[in-house]
Amino acid sequence: MGGTHTKNGIFSATFAYILWGFLPITAVPLLLFAIGAKRISLSMVGFLQYIAPTFMLLIGVFLYQEVFTSAHMIAFVCIWTALAIYTTVRFVLLHRLRRQVMVR
Image 1 (cartoon, one colour):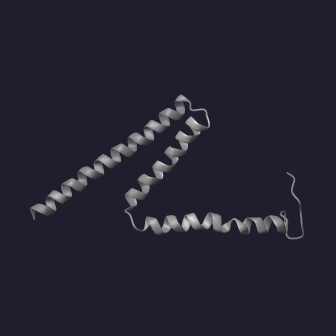
Image 2: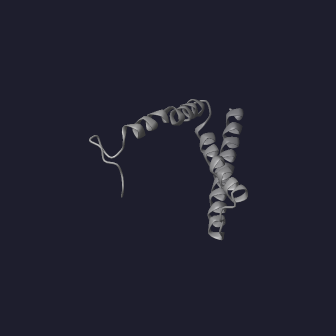
Image 3: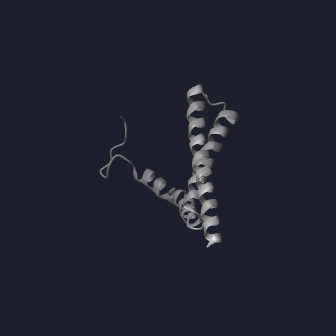
């Protein structure tokens, strides 16, 4: 494994400056996500975290012609089926809870 050894470690000072330069590029989206996540329910945050990888999958398969095997399809369908079951149960329970509150 090749790397340039310096007295301070394996990376040069230039590389360290580049890493520090990319800190805001990484930190700003994470901070914006944290601010936005506080404004919506955790179940919605979870749902949105399924949407982003799904869009990445679609872009990879259709735009970049990535390989999408039957095993990938089975995993994809299982994940979205589980999400659909969870969402359905959640809505049914919420509907029942609202009816109980309205009756009282």
